[in-house]
Image (tube, rainbow, N blue to C red; front, top):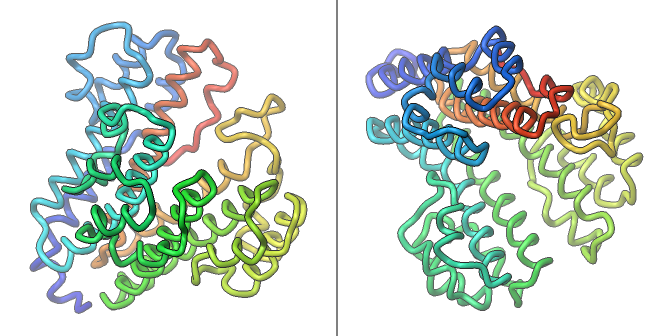
Amino acid sequence: MNEIYFNIDAGYLEGIVRGYRDGLITAPQYMNLTQCETMDDLKLQLATTDYASFLQNEPSPLATSTLSARCTEALVAEFQYMQQNAAEPISKFLDYITYGYMIDNVILLITGTLHERDTHDLLEKCHPLGFFDTMPALCVATTVQDLYSTVLVDSPLAGYFRECLSAEDLNELNIEIIRNTLYKAYLEDFYSYCQSLGEPTGSVMAELLRFEADRRTVNITINSFGTELSKDDRAKLYPRLGNMYPEAQTKLARVDDMDQVKSILEQYSEYKIMLAGVSMNASSSGGNSSGDLSLEDRFFAKEVQLNKESFEQQFHFGVFYSWLRLKEQEIRNIVWIAECISQQQKDKVNNYTAIY
């Protein structure tokens, strides 16, 4: 991309998203949040942040689910403002970002329908950035073929879904295979699109998407332990990109336990540093009683670092992707602190992933 012409179509939105970045909660504000004793105190502290207008009319006591929903509304409002003011190719880039949420919504609806959950409740739980016109009809599909031919054929996910048509029944295992197959196709397509945009967007997004592919590869490996998924099928779910592609992916496809996963990851300098002091069996966000950080926590911290670094360059679209990821991490932090306060677990309240 020619930097000389970048500001014609993208200058305004880049200024907006960098302004949004400056509105992220800072370390002193997090310190104030962690010192709150009640949810009302937390709400009062959040009145000095960008979430103030979304929380001001909420009655007391404020539930953590309500807090999470209102914070997500703030994120969606800011992202949709950028979408409404975007021209090509930024508008297409922002659309690509929403495809990941569409995949999550599709899987949520299929899984909920399989367990006979109420359709209205399922739609309320879907992420607003992942809505598309035919989505409510997902609840009536009974086979993968029906899902594609009646609902998804006209959606942005149609091209990704063709690789899932070999799955016959909508059971628990096949749904997870569909989820990971969709994400694999999505990441590979998004990566190719970003490379077509030229530099510096191509190189910035390449680093971010390679990290995401590596994280998904590790998660697929770990989550397949103790399941009926064969090692050959596991390998087919790995995205064909990332720092671990193809050598480490070939090795991860054959492992049987967490220690083997860790030994493979430690062969890569960026992940060896990340794994120092990690408990491979700890739950996320400090849930482990010994206080060990989990692998997921370290992945979140690494993701924050990479997304902060993307703001160090100018004239690229990666800042839109990075801002959204940082905002999502901020919401996770707020909800974690709120849960610790509401459950009176203040000893764990500082186990969040700091951003700035």
